[in-house]
Structures are given as C-alpha cells and as structure tokens.
Image 1 (cartoon, each protein chain N blue to C red):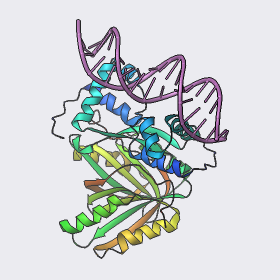
Image 2 (image 1 turned 45 degrees about the vertical axis):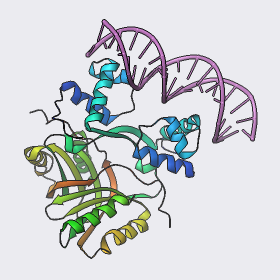
Image 3 (image 1 turned 60 degrees about the horizontal axis):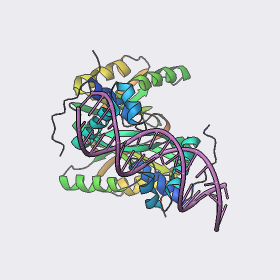
Length: 162
Length: 162
DNA sequence: TCTGAAAGTTTTCATCC
DNA sequence: GGATGAAAACTTTCAGA
C-alpha cells in the first residue's frame, strides 16, 4: 500500500539521507546524528518501511574488485512501442542478472540499459541476445564504461535549497 | 588496501548475490540460505569488508514515492579530455547530490550522467549549471526517464553459466 | 585454515510513561 | 518523543576437523 501523503520533516530528510549513504549503523548512532533517541529512530524507520518509501537495504560492491567486470551503457531505439512489445522487452531485461538498470526514456532513444558483465565477449553476447535478436529493436548504441566515476541509487528527498 | 587476489568459492558467490539483493537479513537467515553457521557467515562478510569488496550497505528508496522526483539521463561530449578538465568536471559532479551516477565512457559520447531532481525546473537548472556553463562541454543530450523499469547496483560476481 | 558451538556483549523492539 | 526491559542479534572465544 504505497498510498500515504508522506509528510516528512527535517529530521526525516536527514535520516533518509544518512540511510541512503550508509544503512549499516545502529539506531543509537543514527539517533545521535539526527538528535533523536534510538526508539524514536526505530519508529520512523519502521514508518518508512510500512509506507513503502524505504524499499530495502542492499550491499554495494566495489566493482573494481570484481575480476573482469565490464560495465556498458546501451542506448536502444525500438520500432513500435505497443504494450505487448514493451512488456516482453522489459520482462526479459528484468529477468537477466547482468542487466543492472533499465530506463524507459523520452527523447532520441527509447531505452537506456546498463549492463554488468564479465569480459567483452559477455557484453557482446548479451547485446546480441537482448537487443540484436529482437526484431523490434531498430537501433543500438553501446558505450563501454572506462571509469565508473560515481555510482549509487541515492536520491534527494527534498528540493535543493534555493 | 584493495590488493587481494580474491579467491571466492561457490558459497561466496551465492552469499554476495543474496547480500546485493537484500542485506537486511540476519546472519542466521543468510547462513541457512547458503548452508553455513551464523559465525561462518559473519567471518566471510567481515572478510569482504576488510578486502574492500563489500563497500557498504545502503537503503534503497522507492523513487515513485518521492514527490516530484524526476530522473534524467544526460549524454555529454567534451571538447578536450585533459586530466585537469576531467578532474574538475568529475569533482563537481561527485559533490552534487542530485547527480546519482557518472560514467566515463568510450564511444559516441564521453560521459553518461544520471540526475535525480525535483521537478523539471531543477533538472534544467542542473543541466545549465553542470554542463552548459562548462565551456569544455561541446554537446549535451538530455533524456527524461518516463519509467525506471529496473534499478539497482547489483553486479554478478562470476560469469554467467555457459 | 576453516568450521560450528557456546559465552558475553550489544542492539533491537514492544511496552509504558 | 523518551525510557525501560525482555528478546534477539551480533561478536568473541575456543575446540575440533
């Protein structure tokens, strides 16, 4: 049930920023950071979970330590955007572990896909299987990542201060 | 010190996959999943941290629950790629909270940048400040995300099974 | 060297104020 | 929102494979 108006105060915004930066801290530590008791922090965190705002906690690996790991950004244009095509296309990508991110975008391309594979051959094979074998894919541009300058999933929960 | 040969066995690969999917489980639960005692799991996890493979644990928010949140993918081409330009450009992006990801890529563009901002005006302002105001940026294409079909930072730690 | 089990410590979490 | 205390988890230690 993601249907809550979400009235976040200043402490909530700071807490969510801290949790997005490092969720591996005790309620006590988090409480000291935002000026709250551990139980108050727990209440708020439970609230985020219950409301669906806080989806999950995940481990982040240092990709440079994974042997042969290659990241690539694929820009895809499709022929027709019917619900069926879209559904089949996205389902396949969601099911593929080497597909890290998929964005349906507006503009010069239709999809931006980020791949994480082992060695260039695996990237080739994935691009072949996921995109080139798909008759509905009209155009594909693959950009190989030379350096993942900044990574993560953190989003600001309030507008930047004017 | 990220200088370890990293000899991961089958259990390590499974444990890392589980942790990347959901790091909010007890050592006991994780142990049952991979067939190890809680203490054995702890030892391995501590090892990943010490070796630098496991960077951190982060909270992932449901972006659809953040009011007015807009994601955008920016494709950037720069004029010259000197170390100084690169350094200044990347430092600014790293310091900007609305910049979620930055990839230095090879191919038709030089950088792929993912922005997370509040409302289209903030995206415009960011694009202006980060890219258009930079004399070294030659070309900029902004793709607005209509639907974040798949998100995350998970990477496979071993090649796909043949 | 890596495992599993048990003891000691800290954290989490429900309840009450 | 804070404080208490029971339950659970984590962390250390140790003996065995």
